[in-house]
Image 1 (spheres, rainbow, N blue to C red):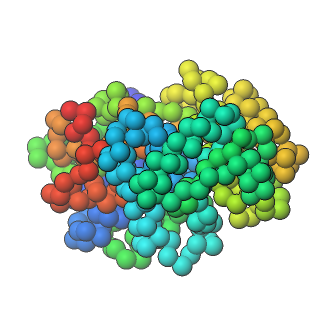
Image 2: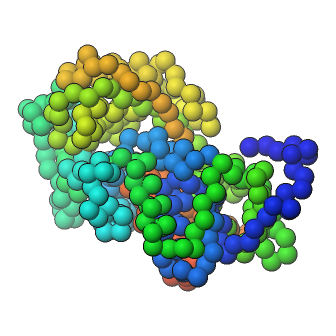
Image 3: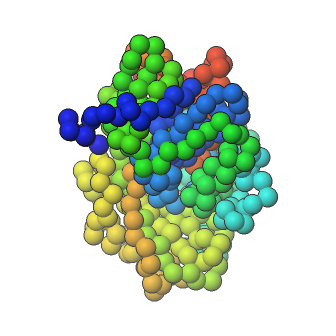
Length: 394
């Protein structure tokens, strides 16, 4: 957002003081608010969102709560080594455990929460070989995984023209927006120190003496600590993120409901494409940004014919049960991809009054809730895991 001279007048007449202001009303911001409120119930916390809660990537993704990161496990090991790869995997396992314990509890049905694992499918022998390598590594490191041959893929997933695949047994899926609203409800029911400000787009964070001034056109917020939890939109708020978190568009479509046939959510084509069937029967499919890499960057949430047609063709080729189903929704959302594929948690190296979490690289639901906890831990003086600490870029 840019603000003209004419717009930027007199906002100090409408200001309020808080201990912490969180910028961003998606899964990262709500997670940070939850853990901060739980850890410090005497803090006065404001959460500021430019539109409505979940209007960014959280309310626009496919609802996968998956472990690991954006690439197959063998590549995670290749990039980070076995020990750190396992640490990254266990971090996301803990994310799911915390969500179940703190938020989901007994409301799984209302949240469309299903813990049926997830599948990575290979349409070529080359990728199947890589998946088998991943599964062997995972088994050797006590991660629950299962091999699937071609008939198993067809029978259990209703998916055709795949060579085989593997199942990650510990994964889950959810209604992402309902999950976000459940976190807000949990905050409001248990903590009285968090205020939510929707339709407050931040256009500047200014230093004034020992405080920060978080400026929106509706109100200015004064506080000693700011948490930026804007993920893909972080570079619009501070230049520090411009070479670390990159706005990346993902496109999705949804079909009308059909009879349940799919055991669990699936990835294909080296995790670039993904699909799942909801408990109510609809099939959601997204991906194919590799077809327009130069277009699928930036902040526009338009859909494009090339990618939407590719999604439809995928259904026709691979998922016969919905090949003729009516398409009811088409949309896109802006994710935050980090420079090395791992999230960033920390504080600005030039200003420790501005903390942040983001860069979840298409795995926000699988990482951000635990990410909010470790951010809170770090603000209380506890160490961050090396792989998630933003100090690796300093």
